[in-house]
Amino acid sequence: MEHRFRILFSLLIFVSSLSSLFYCSKQSDIILSNYEESLVLAKNSNRKLIVVFGADWCPDCRALDGIFKEPEPKTLLDENFILFKVDVGRFDKNLSLNEKLGNPIQNGIPALVILSPEGNILTSTKGGEFSNASKMTKEQVLEYLYRL
Image (cartoon, rainbow, N blue to C red; front, side, top):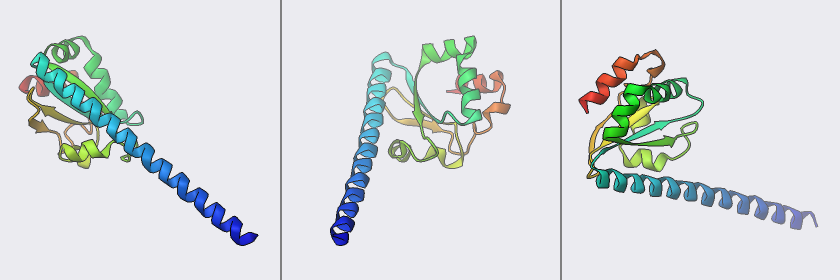
């Protein structure tokens, strides 16, 4: 009886772990699908795509998001860019898109990847340029955006 219980318990754990793999895979599929939709939107509107990798626990990510919502940056973004935000969790979510775009989060978040309307990577903040966004001014962020 105890042997059967162990086998049943092991099987239950195995099935549970498989379901979490399928869930993770499905999440990756969703984010990649949303990314592809954003690329199409960027191409159709002839605007660049900014992929912003971040997380809700990250103070620098929240600071950059706040700057993006201020009137001048918001207008600049709305007129020239499509903004696509990607939640990386605790560096354990949506990593397939991160890898696809050259691992921009390697030196911290928020990390930005800017793509042309055709989908070519124009630049990336792989060096952690925005990882101290909470200490950046609106003018510094605007300077970066205007160079794009």
